Length: 128
Image: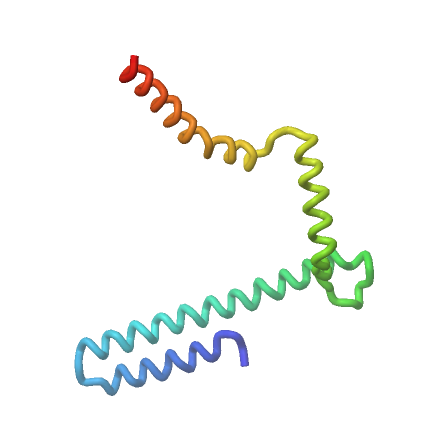
């Protein structure tokens, strides 16, 4: 069964139910459901074709290893390896320039500092 066939079957059921319905509002709603399921069927078929092309591209990229073997994604690293990598990254960050996250952490403290300076100015004016 193709990817969109289930949606087409459901669309046919909704269309048949709309034809047998006597109320206008229910008939319109069943027709809308039928149209929506036909669009879903088209999207499912499209996704199936795109996925086939994507799989082919992955196999071509992995062709240097072997043309017969399907592509295997890299295995997830262990927790220890991930922790080590994050430690190395943090050490490199400390040695290098400031990153956007560092600047955003500094910027978070600016409103507090501005409020503190404003309070000090007000206190100076009031108590002088």
